Image (cartoon, rainbow, N blue to C red):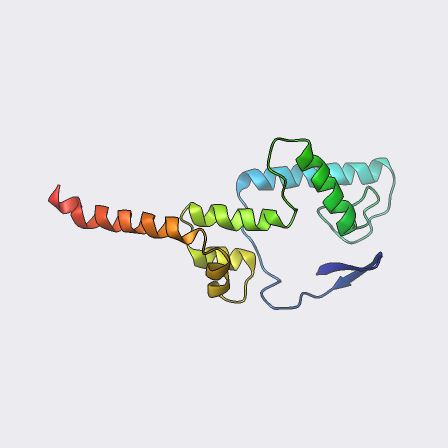
Length: 151
């Protein structure tokens, strides 16, 4: 399900492509944080006696309704400004995620699947600035494998 706003009117829509609807693996720490967040949402809803809106959103307003993307971006920008991290847009977190994974040696096919790109070549073209360091690392690993026998 996608949430889009036409003006300020909420619309739930079906994802445009088959790849847009996918399962993305999460690590145990992230799952703990998300479960804690979900528990707090339920407690908040019960405390304020707000009905369940049925949207089952991870990030939402106090009453369960979706947060408008502009408001979400403003809140994100405010939080970034309060820290010492470089200023980035919320969408840039997606690029940061992909870049860090590629720099850590994650197989580009795995990154492509996580991002939901239509082809792995789109991922490789988009993140080609990361590839030179991967090429150097691959050359070093190959050398270590070949020359390991020669001491």
